[in-house]
Structures are given as structure tokens and as C-alpha cells.
Amino acid sequence: MPIIQTKQLFKIYNEDTIPVYALRDLSLDFEEGEFTTIVGPSGSGKTTLLNMIGGLDTPTRGEVLIDGTNIASLRKGDLIDFRLRNIGFVFQSYNLIPVLTALENVSLIMELQNQDPKSTRERALQVLDEVGLSDKLHSKPSELSGGQQQRVAVARALASRPKFVLADEPTANLDSKSAMNLLDIMAKLNVEESMTFIFSTHDQRVIERARRVVTLVDGALHEDLVKSK
Amino acid sequence: MNWILIFKLAWRNLWRNKRRTLITTGSILFAVILALLMDSMNIGSHEQIISNSLRFGTGYLQIQDTAYFETPSLDFAFDLDERQEEALNQFLGHHAYAVPRVESFVLAAGESETRGALVIGILPELENRMNGFQNFMKEGEILNNDDQMVMIGSGLAQRLSLSLHDTLVVIGQGYQGMQAAGKYPIKGIISHPMEFLDNQLIYLPFEEASWLFVMDGKASHWLIMADTDKNALRVQREIERLLEGTELQVLHWKDLQPDLVKALAFDAVSGRIMQFILYVVIAFGIFGTVLTMTLERQKEFAILVSLGMKRHILALQCFIETILISILGVGAGIMLGFPVLFYFNRNPIPLGEGLSDLVKEYGMEPFLPFSLAPTVFIFQGIAMLILTLIITTYPVWRSLTFPVLENLKR
Image (cartoon, rainbow over all chains, first blue to last red; front, side, top):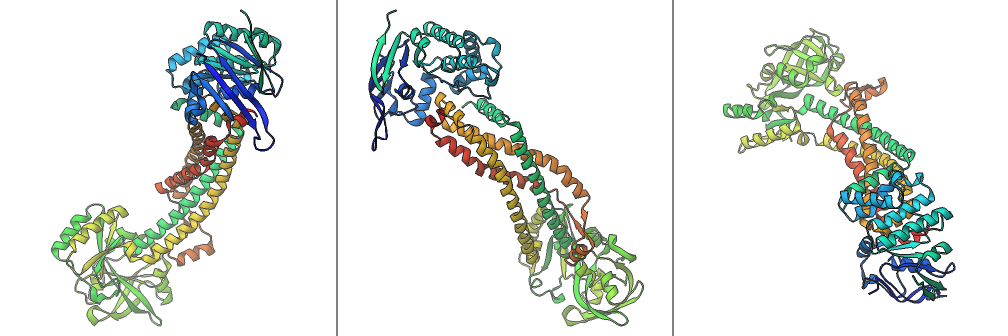
């Protein structure tokens, strides 16, 4: 059974006046452990789709099912809790909490989940080590480079072992070396931790690394390409 | 709920802009000190008025005939029987004592002047314990119990053109229509702190006053002095039980001086209005900071909620931030304000000459007294807490309602 399903998903703005289709009849399945990119020109609906899957936005019509649960049926508080326990987010502009250190940022979600402090710390240290930031544990975001901040963001998304990670243009603000480094880390974690990754991106380097490429045009599915291993 | 995380985030957010937090804390601090000074001065002057009024006037409690309050005539004078006096002494214990009084208005005359005056028959030792009148002696000596002499206020001496050792003549009405007339050498002149009393006061030993008014040892009323109002109320309840079924009653000073109570309440309200204005100024200072702290972090709020922080936890974090900034300001204000109040409590500010005469007319001493009563500090704490709770509704409301997606895109 797919871990994520979108069924005839529509997102329409100004439906009563001049309708603008951000998503148009989009039905997709994502299996556990996939490393998928959503590509398409600006305004094609990539971010909107990720927001729908992440429960940050609501569809005008259609359904998003996560492990069989229609997330639109959840109450607001339950939806937040659902996100906390099931979804990891990596944002384009890192979005770390500026008053917390790298270690604290990575621990944040596990602390919100009220996990045991000792295992939280051990897991955060482990993930930060995996992304190569063992020497920056106590640095605040302002003391880190863009690439380092994005690695902290990835570590934060992965630390609580969510069912899947949604990454919205994670390499957009990074230089080539940092971008490649980050992709290596995510590919490694995808294999080692069987983590499902869904990216939206324009970045050709990301597209080349993905095993499945979903192309959107004007909010509709244009192509769904699964590369052979 | 992870309280450590919430407090950590709240505390660090407070210090992410140190200068702003310090300015806000500083403004609360100075406002609290100012409010403390105002409140302390207000309560201090009230305490002084009440103290003077109790020490030189009514006492905390009065035992009197049930008709005496409406018609303060010597005809309602009374004796306490042995059983009552014994029980009374038992109730009073170490925290209170009773002082019998004879009080009546007379005509007082010197060689060429006659004025209305108030004769107060006293037991000098108890009177001195009650109001320390010895400290106000201007000339001469204090009375003894068996003296057939008087002490008079310096204002009355001046009005009647009398000096020490001159003779004062009094004439009035005694118990049940008996004539009361006598002439007494002046043993002492007292400069009474309450000017209206200073202008009419004649102290006679209790026994001599009793003889003058033909009272046969009766008192017009008994004053009860206590160390605190709380003890006075306790004694009042016990005396009420003792006097049940008699023609006597015991009244609290608030019953005896309703006008004073009203005047103090009115004055307290005007003081509170001034404080309210001050607090409104503080409130806008805090609100400005809280508003900025809230609006500049909308994206951060959106990130936290998208990562899985529930809105009510975010609201709690904002609430704690506001409470913390208030606690810092109020705590520092009280800590710095206490030594200032302590200094002024020990060294009341003397009033200038013109103002000094004015307050004397109202029976007050010419100083600005400052109170160290716990209520002064407790009130500031409660007022700031209420203020903070009102202010905190904004960030709480905002964190509960802001649109996540819109702010995430910022």
C-alpha cells in the first residue's frame, strides 16, 4: 500500500470569480523508501502539492491519504500532532529557530514529541554526526554557513524518524559543493534509514539523483518517470 | 507538555534583542518605583492620619452608653462593675489596654478672654502611653493623678492670653444638670500636634475631672488601644459578648469616625486614578515590545506550527515571555524601590512652611510620611500581573489565529 496517495486533487484560487488552478486533478501514489522529485516550471504547483501532502494547505477538492488516513478529516490540533509524528520538513530557506543551537534545533521535534531526553540527545548527536556537523553542536544558526544550516535542517527533519520527508527546493540557496554534499547525505539516509523523500526542485543535480521524477505543468501531471535502478 | 523547552524558548526569545528587553524592563522598573513612592506616600499619610486620630481621639475602640454616640452628654456616663472590669482586663491581655475618659465642653476663661474649650479627664500615665503627649510639652510639667491643676494647649493659652502658673477658670454642665465650675493653676502648656485640639484642649487628672463634673468616678467613655487593628477587632468581639444585655456598646474607630473613613476612601481613589494613569503609560511600553516581538516572529511561529508545535503551546510560550518581562521589571523595581521607601520611611520629607500650616489645620503632622506596609508592594505585584494578563491577550490571540501558510511564505 502506498504511504502517500493524492486522489483527484484540486487547488483552485478565486473559484467564484476568475479561477486559478494551482493543482488540477492530481492523483499520485508514493511508496515507502522512494526518492522522488517533483519538477516543473515556476507556478506549476510543486510547492502547493508539498503543502497539501504536509497538511499545511487544504485542497479545494480531492483527498490526501497518508497511510490510509484522509488528513482533511483530522481536526486542526490532531493535524498538527499528525505532522509532528509523521512528517519531516526541509524548507528552502532552512527555517531554523534562531535562538536554538544546532543540537537544540535537531532535538526540537523529539522534545515536542516528549521523547526521553537522553535518547533525544543521543539521536540528535547521531544525526548531526551523519550530516557532518559534530563540531558545530553548540553553534547558533547565525554562526553557520547556508550549507551547514541546511544540513541542520535535514538533520532536524530526520531525527525523529518520520514516515517521510518533504523538501521544498532544499538546494536552491546553496552553492554547488554544498548542494552535492547535502544530496549525498540525503541519498545515504534514504538508503540507510529507508526514509521516503519527496523533493520539489528546479535543480538538475537533484533531478539526476532522484529515482522517480514527477513533472507538473500548470498544476496537472505532465510526466511520471521512474528511472531504472 | 515540555515545560523546559517552552521556558528555554521564552527566555531566549526575550534576550534575542537585549537592548529592547533592557529598555522595556527599565521603563517598568522606573514606573514601579514611581508607583511605589506614590502608593507608599498615600498609605503613609493615611496611616498617619489614622494613627493621630486614634491616639489623640477615639482610640481603636470605645465602650460607651448606647445613647452616647448620638448624644455625647455626660448624662450617659457609666461605671464598669467589678466583674466587667476583670473580664475586660482579661480580654485585653498584652496586646491592648483600656483608658477611661471624661470629656465635656466647657467655657474657659483667663483674665479677660473666654472661649469654648474641651476638658479631657485623663490618667496621665495611660494617656502618655497612648499618645506620648509628654513629647509635646512646651512649658511646665506633666500632670500627676492627684493634681488639682490643668495642662492646656498652646493655642488655647494664646487665645486666653494665659501663661504657665496662671489660673484658668472653667464653667460648664456636669452629670445630670449639676453645675461644673472650677479654677485651676496651669501646670503645663502642651503644643498639641493637632491644631484644632491645640486651640481648645484642657487636660485634667481623671479624678479631678470626675469631681468637677460631679461624676462620682464614672467615665463618659472608655478608649481601648491595641497594637494592631486586627487585635482591636478580636477584642471588640469579646467585649461585645461581655456587654450583651447591658446599656453599653463597643464601637470600632471606623464606626466612630465615618467621615474620616469616607475622606480616606475618597483620597485613596484619587491616588489610584493617578496610579492608573501611570500604569497605562507602562502598559503601552510593554505592549509596544510585545507587539514587535510577536509580529517580527510570525514566520518563526509558522515554522514551529508546521513542524508540529501545537498552537496552544506556542500561545503559552508567548504568555510566559510577557510574564517574564513583567516579573523582571517589577522584581527589579521592588528591589530598588524598597531601599528608597525605607529611607523615606525613616526620614519623612518635611513640608514647606505654607503647606506645613495647612496640614496642621487638618490635624496632621507637617511631614510626608512613607509607609512600608506589605500592601504597597503586593498591590504593585497584583496590578502588574493584571496589566500583563491584559497585554498578553494579544500575542496569545495572535499565536492561536495566525495563518501558517501565509507566514511560512514570508
